[in-house]
Image 1: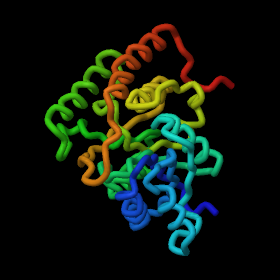
Image 2: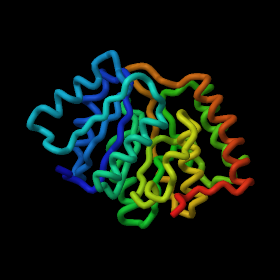
Image 3: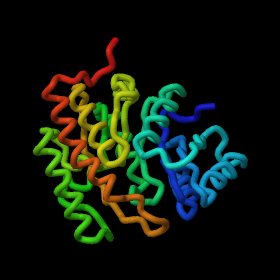
Image 4: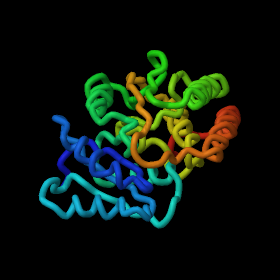
Length: 250
């Protein structure tokens, strides 16, 4: 039973310290959001916590899970979640981390940008109004900030926070994009989805948010993920020059 027009997709790997807290925080909002957790075989029991909550009477029809075997990548997790959300009829589909680096209280603001203001994609942006990052080492702040600058220069994408992972899509955006043609799995996935939506002509708004570094659990960032983003951007630009089709073909 679908209880909302909106679903928040939360990918997880070893998030036992955060998962119940983030679920309760989302469900505690005045605006009703459903939740889909995509768990990549967390050995710490993350999925068991979610299924325990699903088996109770608190959140009937609002909490869902897809369990996958092993770490298959952030991008493939979201693609699986997008397909599930479209199949289940949701109008607004969100991306959000499990570790409270994205504040659940900002979900209604992203929703309003799409549902009330008419945008097709709303991005929770760390950099649209300065640098709004808390408790990150300075080196990581600079890496992230200048990575977004680099993406803007190479691709021409008019977005300040190109690697942001806190977003709201209208379903028509995900219906228009050939999700099976999305190549990248890490930070480059976030860039590729924004670039593809932009090239398809959808209206995009950056909503300023404050990003807070995780307090519990372990970051999944790695040098390989960052490297994929650096070289992936060049690939996106080259594909654009060569006239790659970004919309699904009818």
